[in-house]
Figure 1 (tube, rainbow, N blue to C red):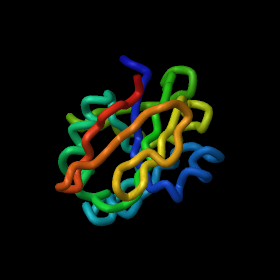
Figure 2: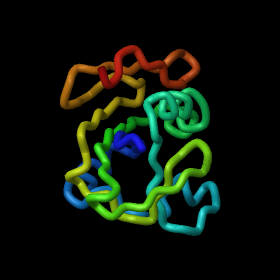
Figure 3: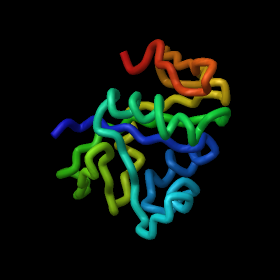
Figure 4: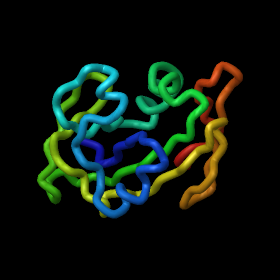
Length: 136
């Protein structure tokens, strides 16, 4: 299994994520979906992330800032169990901060605010994400 995974969050969570990692919880979007289990949701590829940003996830973050985290996740090393629901990977385990390979924060219009490398993302007029340069 590939070790690269991607997580999307609100940029206000960045400090906590860098300090504590990704914690299983029922977040704002999970509450809307009436989910009852504390979980961490990941995308297993850039294509899966891109597809979600063009559809349902882009709609949730329309006109809001967004944080995209790239993980280098050695599941065996960290004892993390992942299962797939068909389009996302799900974990009941904490994802440690040392697995964060990179992250990028985008403003509410989809333009890069900060990152560790030079990447750009933009939204089209419909408010959905259009990736122009991403994780080269």
